[in-house]
Length: 318
View 1: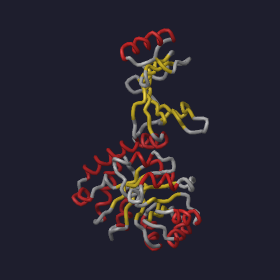
View 2 (view 1 turned 90 degrees about the vertical axis):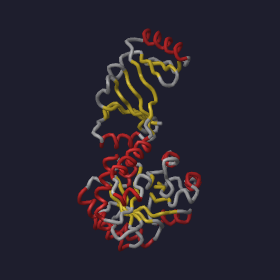
View 3 (view 1 turned 30 degrees about the vertical axis):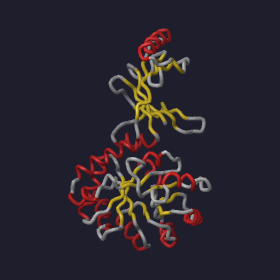
View 4 (view 1 turned 180 degrees about the vertical axis):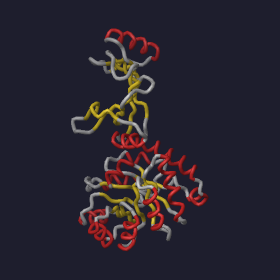
C-alpha cells in the first residue's frame, strides 16, 4: 500500500459530515486524477463514509485518518480502509495495527517519536503538522540521522510548497486538503472539487518540456540546420555527439532518423515511475524496451507507445 501511495504522490485529506457525500466526493477526486483519499475520523460519519466508498469505488486507495484508538482502527479496516493514519505516535495503536496487518502511518514530530517508530519496526511515518514544525528544513535536519526513514508530510501543504516537499528523496507523498475545501464539500460542488483536484494532480507531476528532438537524415543535414537554428536564436551549439547535437538546451537536432516521424518531445518530471502510474491510469502505455537507466539503476528515460502528431514522447527524470 505504501508503494501505491508513493506512486499517487498526493493524498487528499477529507472530512465529511454526511456519509452520503463521500462517494460523489471521491468520484470527483478520481475524475480529477487522484485515485486516493484519506477519510478522517473527525466526524461520526467517517466509518460509514469509508464503507460506502469501498463498496462503490474500490479503485480508490482508501485510508482512514485521525485514528486514535485500536477500536477505531478495527472499525476503519472492517469498513474497507486499506491503511491507517494517526496524528501522533501511540504505541498501543501502532502495535495493534501491526498485529492485525494494517499498514499504519503514525504522526511523528520529533527525533524521540522517530526513535520509537523505528523501534516498533516502522519504515515510514507521517510528519505532522509539517509546516508548523519547520517544514522542509526540519525534514532535512531529521533525515540527517534517520536517512532510511520515509515520510508523508501533512499539515500546511499547499500549491506554493508542494514541490519543495516532493523534491526530498525520502518523501513518499504529501497529504493536503486544498483540493477539497470545506465549503465545496458542504455545498456538494463536486465540479469545483474535480477542477481543483485536476490542478493539484498536474502541479504534483510537474511535467515540463525539456527539449524537442528534430529528425534529420544524416550528420551533414543535422549540422547545417543546427547552424541555421543557432544563427536564428543566438543559442550555442552544445553537446555535439555521434547521434545528435543541441542548439541551446531546448532543441536536439538528430543526426539520423530517430523515434517519431518528425522527431521526439522530452517531458521532464520529478518522478518517472509516478508519472507513468498516472498516465497509465489515463489509458496510455509505455514501451518498456525503450527504458534507460542511470549507473545506479534509476529509471532516467522511457518512451510512450505510438506517436503524437508525428512525434515520439519520452519521459525524462529531472
